[in-house]
Image (cartoon, rainbow, N blue to C red):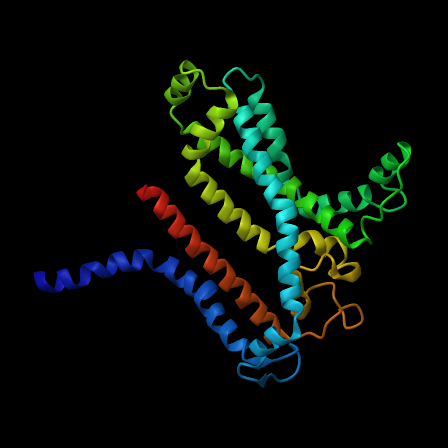
Length: 305
């Protein structure tokens, strides 16, 4: 009897954790397997699907639209996410000063855009950067400069999307850096002050090295979110890529091929193909996986050092 009980007892523990694995399988593993199957099909979502094997992957490399979207995504990412990270790092170093008053107010004010609906932010930016009645062009006219057609010019579109990314990400990165700065031993700064080190030298010699794990985490999360830019151009241009596809990103391209809500046969710039849209999703997943692997190696190396 004791032997039987020992054999049965572990199943109670397995049953207690079973709901997690059931949900994980239902919402992660099974959809992943189905997405792998769908990548071998050509299907518009209505009629019968057609097995095409690896033809969709071949199409990914031959059409060129994905690589254009990937390059444009990387460009917008560099214009938006990099300034957001650097600005948040400098702002966090300033807010960490012990004599600064109203630190809580500044933190809340900077983090507020993070909890604001991106749809609302996109509508506001659309009005602010309007070619004829936008506040920015009105300000340019008031100082004698020519207005810029922000939402029709290629670089203007990229700048507007980049500014939206900065608006959204700055507060999040700031909070992460503030948490990292709080974990640094204050005695290091006191010793540096006694040695006569200035603010800039202290920042580069103490703050940056001690924040290395936090920087790696911020760079990884920032890059992942940068590769998934979607809502900004989708709302600005109603699911299109904008003039000359200057706002086209990888996720927006996938949205178009999947026939996302709001797109019709008349307004969609591409023909719906769920198989090709799935292949785009797999390509983005592979990129994210590679970045995660690089982050793991870098973080492990920093830990060993």
